[in-house]
Length: 177
Image (spheres, rainbow, N blue to C red):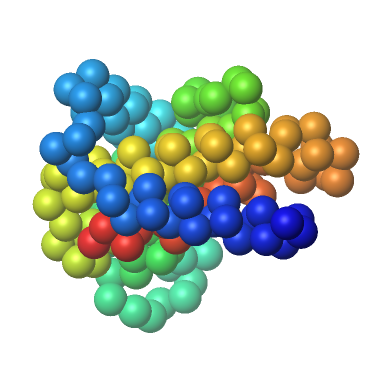
């Protein structure tokens, strides 16, 4: 089998896993961990919202001046189009470098997964169980991808694994909504 064939087979297996995962299959400790990570995400995003890097993003979003401003921006009274609320929340959650980390893959999955899941949930009126499914899938895909690619490969090319793996990761879990 060629390398393309192997990659295609792995992607198909991953797609089947993502499609088949249901809330009822999740152990209670996994659900509790998602809740813990979400509270942690909200806490660091609230504090990070006061940082200059976050305020720059908020000014950028305000300057756009268009779109339906329904997406919550954590730590502020502002709202933004969902795409931009996800950007703002991810920025503020990473601003003070207190976000979660998976050391083995050198990733900060929460700053990618939670903003995307929150914005998508707000857009489509998601329920808590679907939100938790999306977060579990986001963490699972992102961390597995990070381990497979190897952090050193990203760093050698001048990238952080969170950015490279996170950009590919968002699509899988969001189909839950």
